Length: 224
Image (cartoon, rainbow, N blue to C red; front, side):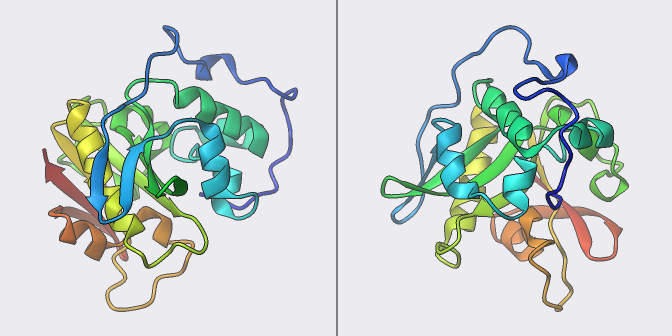
Protein backbone atom coordinates (compact mmCIF):
# COMPACT_ATOMS: atom_id res chain seq x y z
CA UNK A 1 0.00 0.00 0.00
CA UNK A 2 1.07 3.55 -0.54
CA UNK A 3 0.48 6.97 0.93
CA UNK A 4 -2.11 9.27 -0.55
CA UNK A 5 -1.61 12.26 -2.74
CA UNK A 6 -2.31 10.75 -6.15
CA UNK A 7 -3.32 13.23 -8.84
CA UNK A 8 -6.50 12.77 -10.85
CA UNK A 9 -5.52 11.98 -14.42
CA UNK A 10 -8.75 10.47 -15.64
CA UNK A 11 -12.24 12.02 -15.64
CA UNK A 12 -14.24 11.40 -12.42
CA UNK A 13 -16.05 8.08 -12.40
CA UNK A 14 -14.12 6.57 -15.30
CA UNK A 15 -11.81 3.56 -15.28
CA UNK A 16 -9.27 2.33 -17.82
CA UNK A 17 -10.97 0.04 -20.36
CA UNK A 18 -8.52 -2.82 -19.75
CA UNK A 19 -9.50 -2.84 -16.05
CA UNK A 20 -13.18 -3.48 -16.70
CA UNK A 21 -14.50 -6.85 -15.52
CA UNK A 22 -15.44 -9.05 -18.50
CA UNK A 23 -18.43 -11.35 -18.67
CA UNK A 24 -20.80 -9.45 -16.41
CA UNK A 25 -21.11 -9.59 -12.64
CA UNK A 26 -21.54 -12.89 -10.83
CA UNK A 27 -22.50 -13.56 -7.24
CA UNK A 28 -19.79 -13.27 -4.56
CA UNK A 29 -18.64 -16.07 -2.27
CA UNK A 30 -21.37 -16.80 0.24
CA UNK A 31 -20.56 -19.47 2.88
CA UNK A 32 -20.14 -18.25 6.45
CA UNK A 33 -16.95 -19.12 8.31
CA UNK A 34 -16.93 -18.95 12.11
CA UNK A 35 -13.27 -18.33 12.79
CA UNK A 36 -13.07 -17.10 16.37
CA UNK A 37 -15.62 -16.71 19.18
CA UNK A 38 -17.84 -13.74 18.27
CA UNK A 39 -15.80 -12.97 15.11
CA UNK A 40 -17.49 -14.09 11.90
CA UNK A 41 -15.80 -13.95 8.52
CA UNK A 42 -17.86 -13.83 5.32
CA UNK A 43 -17.75 -12.38 1.85
CA UNK A 44 -18.08 -8.62 1.71
CA UNK A 45 -21.68 -7.47 1.22
CA UNK A 46 -20.71 -4.26 -0.56
CA UNK A 47 -18.19 -1.47 -0.74
CA UNK A 48 -20.02 0.43 2.00
CA UNK A 49 -18.79 -2.14 4.54
CA UNK A 50 -15.22 -1.40 3.51
CA UNK A 51 -15.86 2.33 3.89
CA UNK A 52 -16.35 1.53 7.57
CA UNK A 53 -13.26 -0.67 7.81
CA UNK A 54 -10.87 1.45 5.74
CA UNK A 55 -12.01 4.85 7.00
CA UNK A 56 -11.04 8.01 5.15
CA UNK A 57 -7.39 8.33 6.17
CA UNK A 58 -4.32 6.13 6.12
CA UNK A 59 -2.90 3.68 3.61
CA UNK A 60 -6.00 1.52 3.14
CA UNK A 61 -8.17 4.51 2.23
CA UNK A 62 -5.67 5.53 -0.46
CA UNK A 63 -4.92 2.08 -1.86
CA UNK A 64 -8.30 0.30 -1.85
CA UNK A 65 -6.40 -2.97 -2.42
CA UNK A 66 -5.24 -1.95 -5.89
CA UNK A 67 -1.50 -1.69 -5.25
CA UNK A 68 -0.82 -5.36 -6.01
CA UNK A 69 -3.36 -5.60 -8.81
CA UNK A 70 -2.30 -2.71 -11.05
CA UNK A 71 0.91 -1.66 -12.72
CA UNK A 72 2.68 1.43 -11.39
CA UNK A 73 1.34 3.61 -14.20
CA UNK A 74 -2.23 2.30 -13.82
CA UNK A 75 -2.19 2.80 -10.06
CA UNK A 76 -0.84 6.34 -10.27
CA UNK A 77 -3.32 7.31 -12.99
CA UNK A 78 -6.22 6.78 -10.57
CA UNK A 79 -7.25 8.81 -7.57
CA UNK A 80 -8.59 7.34 -4.32
CA UNK A 81 -12.22 7.47 -5.45
CA UNK A 82 -11.45 5.63 -8.68
CA UNK A 83 -9.50 2.94 -6.82
CA UNK A 84 -12.51 2.52 -4.55
CA UNK A 85 -14.71 2.18 -7.64
CA UNK A 86 -12.43 -0.56 -8.96
CA UNK A 87 -12.72 -2.52 -5.73
CA UNK A 88 -16.50 -2.07 -5.79
CA UNK A 89 -16.55 -3.69 -9.25
CA UNK A 90 -14.27 -6.52 -8.10
CA UNK A 91 -16.54 -7.26 -5.14
CA UNK A 92 -19.17 -8.39 -7.64
CA UNK A 93 -16.82 -10.89 -9.26
CA UNK A 94 -16.63 -14.56 -8.43
CA UNK A 95 -14.58 -15.57 -6.59
CA UNK A 96 -14.78 -12.44 -4.46
CA UNK A 97 -11.49 -10.58 -3.92
CA UNK A 98 -11.49 -10.93 -0.15
CA UNK A 99 -13.34 -11.52 3.09
CA UNK A 100 -14.69 -9.32 5.88
CA UNK A 101 -14.58 -9.92 9.65
CA UNK A 102 -17.52 -8.84 11.77
CA UNK A 103 -18.08 -8.49 15.48
CA UNK A 104 -21.82 -8.80 15.73
CA UNK A 105 -23.09 -6.75 12.81
CA UNK A 106 -20.09 -4.41 12.73
CA UNK A 107 -17.52 -4.87 9.94
CA UNK A 108 -14.13 -4.64 11.65
CA UNK A 109 -11.57 -6.13 9.26
CA UNK A 110 -10.73 -7.03 5.67
CA UNK A 111 -8.36 -9.55 4.08
CA UNK A 112 -7.50 -9.46 0.39
CA UNK A 113 -7.39 -13.04 -0.94
CA UNK A 114 -7.85 -14.12 -4.54
CA UNK A 115 -6.20 -16.15 -7.32
CA UNK A 116 -2.59 -15.04 -7.73
CA UNK A 117 -3.20 -14.45 -11.43
CA UNK A 118 -5.27 -11.37 -10.49
CA UNK A 119 -2.30 -9.60 -8.92
CA UNK A 120 -0.30 -8.21 -11.81
CA UNK A 121 2.26 -6.20 -9.86
CA UNK A 122 2.72 -8.90 -7.24
CA UNK A 123 3.64 -11.45 -9.91
CA UNK A 124 6.38 -9.11 -11.14
CA UNK A 125 7.78 -8.31 -7.68
CA UNK A 126 10.96 -10.17 -6.69
CA UNK A 127 10.18 -10.02 -2.97
CA UNK A 128 6.88 -11.89 -3.55
CA UNK A 129 8.03 -14.41 -6.15
CA UNK A 130 9.62 -17.79 -5.63
CA UNK A 131 10.75 -20.63 -7.86
CA UNK A 132 8.02 -22.90 -6.45
CA UNK A 133 5.23 -20.78 -7.98
CA UNK A 134 4.47 -20.32 -11.65
CA UNK A 135 3.11 -16.83 -12.17
CA UNK A 136 0.16 -18.04 -14.24
CA UNK A 137 -0.82 -21.05 -12.11
CA UNK A 138 -4.58 -20.67 -11.45
CA UNK A 139 -4.39 -23.14 -8.56
CA UNK A 140 -2.33 -20.76 -6.42
CA UNK A 141 -4.13 -18.03 -4.47
CA UNK A 142 -2.55 -15.15 -2.56
CA UNK A 143 -3.25 -13.39 0.73
CA UNK A 144 -1.92 -9.91 0.08
CA UNK A 145 -3.09 -7.64 2.91
CA UNK A 146 -4.98 -7.26 6.16
CA UNK A 147 -6.87 -4.20 7.33
CA UNK A 148 -8.21 -4.10 10.90
CA UNK A 149 -10.42 -1.21 11.88
CA UNK A 150 -9.00 1.19 14.47
CA UNK A 151 -10.23 0.26 17.93
CA UNK A 152 -10.55 -3.47 17.15
CA UNK A 153 -6.91 -4.54 17.03
CA UNK A 154 -5.46 -7.20 19.35
CA UNK A 155 -8.83 -8.92 19.53
CA UNK A 156 -8.15 -11.89 17.27
CA UNK A 157 -9.53 -10.22 14.15
CA UNK A 158 -6.43 -10.80 12.02
CA UNK A 159 -6.30 -14.48 13.01
CA UNK A 160 -9.98 -14.84 12.13
CA UNK A 161 -9.42 -13.14 8.80
CA UNK A 162 -6.61 -15.54 7.88
CA UNK A 163 -8.76 -18.53 8.83
CA UNK A 164 -11.55 -17.12 6.69
CA UNK A 165 -9.14 -16.51 3.81
CA UNK A 166 -8.08 -20.16 3.91
CA UNK A 167 -11.71 -21.31 3.71
CA UNK A 168 -12.48 -18.81 0.95
CA UNK A 169 -9.56 -20.07 -1.14
CA UNK A 170 -10.47 -23.70 -0.49
CA UNK A 171 -14.12 -23.07 -1.47
CA UNK A 172 -12.89 -21.37 -4.64
CA UNK A 173 -10.93 -24.44 -5.71
CA UNK A 174 -7.42 -23.32 -4.80
CA UNK A 175 -4.74 -25.97 -4.37
CA UNK A 176 -2.30 -23.71 -2.54
CA UNK A 177 -2.54 -20.46 -0.62
CA UNK A 178 0.46 -18.12 -0.46
CA UNK A 179 1.29 -15.24 1.88
CA UNK A 180 4.08 -12.67 1.93
CA UNK A 181 4.55 -11.78 5.60
CA UNK A 182 7.01 -9.65 7.45
CA UNK A 183 9.77 -11.63 9.15
CA UNK A 184 10.94 -9.13 11.74
CA UNK A 185 13.65 -11.40 13.27
CA UNK A 186 12.88 -10.12 16.75
CA UNK A 187 12.75 -6.43 15.86
CA UNK A 188 9.51 -4.47 16.06
CA UNK A 189 7.98 -4.13 12.61
CA UNK A 190 6.64 -0.73 11.56
CA UNK A 191 2.89 -0.28 10.95
CA UNK A 192 3.67 0.24 7.27
CA UNK A 193 5.06 -3.29 7.08
CA UNK A 194 2.38 -5.13 9.01
CA UNK A 195 -0.38 -4.95 6.41
CA UNK A 196 1.10 -8.09 4.83
CA UNK A 197 0.75 -9.96 8.13
CA UNK A 198 3.51 -11.41 10.29
CA UNK A 199 5.38 -14.66 9.86
CA UNK A 200 4.15 -15.76 13.32
CA UNK A 201 0.52 -15.24 12.21
CA UNK A 202 0.93 -17.46 9.17
CA UNK A 203 2.95 -20.13 10.93
CA UNK A 204 0.28 -20.42 13.62
CA UNK A 205 -2.22 -21.14 10.83
CA UNK A 206 -0.08 -23.98 9.43
CA UNK A 207 1.74 -22.16 6.62
CA UNK A 208 5.33 -23.17 5.82
CA UNK A 209 8.16 -20.94 4.63
CA UNK A 210 9.12 -21.76 1.03
CA UNK A 211 11.40 -18.79 0.27
CA UNK A 212 13.11 -15.80 1.85
CA UNK A 213 13.54 -13.44 -1.10
CA UNK A 214 15.17 -10.71 0.97
CA UNK A 215 15.92 -9.73 4.54
CA UNK A 216 12.79 -9.22 6.59
CA UNK A 217 10.43 -10.90 4.13
CA UNK A 218 9.23 -14.47 3.67
CA UNK A 219 7.00 -16.35 1.25
CA UNK A 220 4.78 -18.93 2.92
CA UNK A 221 2.44 -21.59 1.54
CA UNK A 222 -0.37 -23.80 2.74
CA UNK A 223 -1.62 -26.82 0.80
CA UNK A 224 -5.41 -26.89 0.77
